[in-house]
Amino acid sequence: MEKEINIHVKVWRQKGPKAKGKFETYHLDRISGDTSFLEMLDILNEQLVSKGQEPIAFDNDCREGICGMCSLYINGHPHGPDNLITTCQLHMRHFKDGETITIEPWRSAAFPVIRDLMVDRRAFDKIIQAGGYVSVNTGGVPDANTIPIPKPVADEAMDAASCIGCGACVAACKNGSAMLFVSAKVSQLALLPQGKIESKTRAKAMIAQMDALGFGNCTNTRACELECPKGVSISHIARLNREFLKAKLSN
Image 1 (cartoon, rainbow, N blue to C red):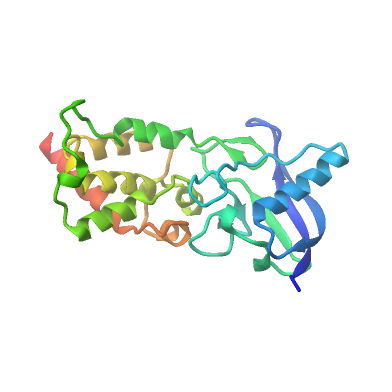
Image 2 (image 1 turned 90 degrees about the horizontal axis):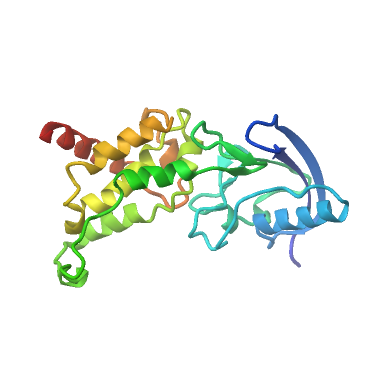
């Protein structure tokens, strides 16, 4: 017999970026333990709409742990209490009967609230635009499979590339730093031959953009690594610092 629980959901409600927000509490009965967290919010919204109330705004897309859109701060943890999963992969079996679940948006000056639980994460796009790309001559690019790359290097680059840009690292950091995100995007290119073209400018440009957008400084508390749903290592931050230093020295 599947587990069913009754819960209280304490949700941050905010009508717009400049509006004053507040928590509102709702009650849900007989929620199956097999229900995903976002499905639970769908059920809650159906109840609110049936009562003529405003549904809760929250981001979601693939619901397969790939897109990173399901950015919710749940009971003090980005993406909830379970490790190495996104909110859409979290199920209600992780909560107790009668529990009050507190849900908030990411808290960062660089991620202003759009409405309720939705935040504007375009700052990440601007960081990528500053240097998270490679230059190629169309038609003259060798097939990637023909370029010999040692497996340990390829594996490390893939570890960095697993970052989905959800922003959990920023939400977990007491300083609101985006260093784990930036370092992952720098590492995935710096480790591969295709990324060498911009290697002298990439880290410097992306860090400058990160600072300009209002993200905080890294103080190596490792909260970002702990809460990252893809387990991206802070060892990439060390590489980012090295790439930044090399860029400064080369200039």
